[in-house]
Length: 425
Ligand code: SF4
Image 1 (cartoon, protein in one colour):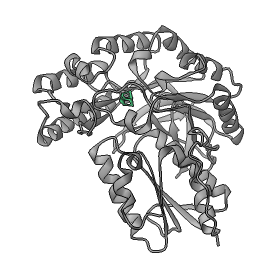
Image 2 (cartoon, helix red, strand yellow):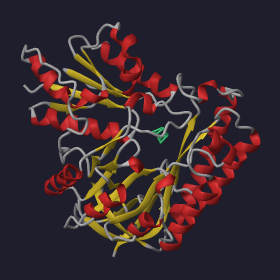
Image 3 (tube, helix red, strand yellow):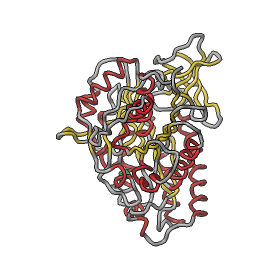
Image 4 (tube, protein in one colour):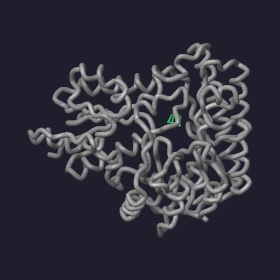
């Protein structure tokens, strides 16, 4: 009987990409991937440390796995890199693996079951993750960059993931071609800070230009960029038919004062100009964002500036974080830290506005067409995501899984995540 492996992945898209690739290694090695709640022979917890809440979730997940007798427990990810010493004294963890050795997890676990001691190569390439198994996802995420040199005053990531490092252009193009050959039709580029991509002088824009020349009926999504790299050249690239009109552009705050304290490298007015510029070319362009509430010194007035900025931009989705003090960062030492109570209230206010804006954005698409990549077929309905990264469902007598279908949007149905309904064109 094949051995069972279960994953719990916390945090960013990059962790998700790395877990998917690891799961594919286990599948190729004859293992069966099961939900984290099910009994398994191996539990892999891919942790995150971006906020106090991520630390707590990582610890809870580790504790849950440690209770499973006889199971191999592998803990990896940013929480390991930031708290390795204290985790080393915990019992019940079989392997503690830092980010730079994460890609060796399958070979270590498999060697362990075979009674071998695997030598760990500490110099292993951080980009050496294999093609994701087609059965795991509809969209293929490709890692192009790791680390960050920006040192925003609140962020622990540059200390945990290290300096920015870019993946060779040919590796990225080969990986995309491999995934397309496997049948993937949507490619998502990911990295910790893709804006600083630079491989031997090849910039992110030049990388994109090359990628868009790869033949076939497929589309490209850029997960997240920093506003400081959004010049006219990149806006121009969004006109390419393979590019999807959606971008996660981290605002973090709508207050000029707070942005300066955060050591972000743009002002709110520059951010707004970028969005106006891109929407003057692609009117329905979907902008989603991250917003931090309760940064030290954020008064009620400065918070209102953030809330007004959200309304002014009209985001399709807002991911809100309560500011979390990360030891070792500049912001941890700033005066005027905001109380947890106020942070929670502000976070609730942003959530309310975010829901309203999401509804408005999705409603604005009614009457237009979306090219939907179908992910599911259930009860005579196909569902998936349109190019603007909005969920769409439509009636169909056949399962059109993994096919592009042009759908005219006719209404918005409310629910936990309101989705658009339409008819095949
Ligand atoms: S750009 Fe700023 S927020 Fe993003 S990972 Fe780098 S330091 Fe952190």
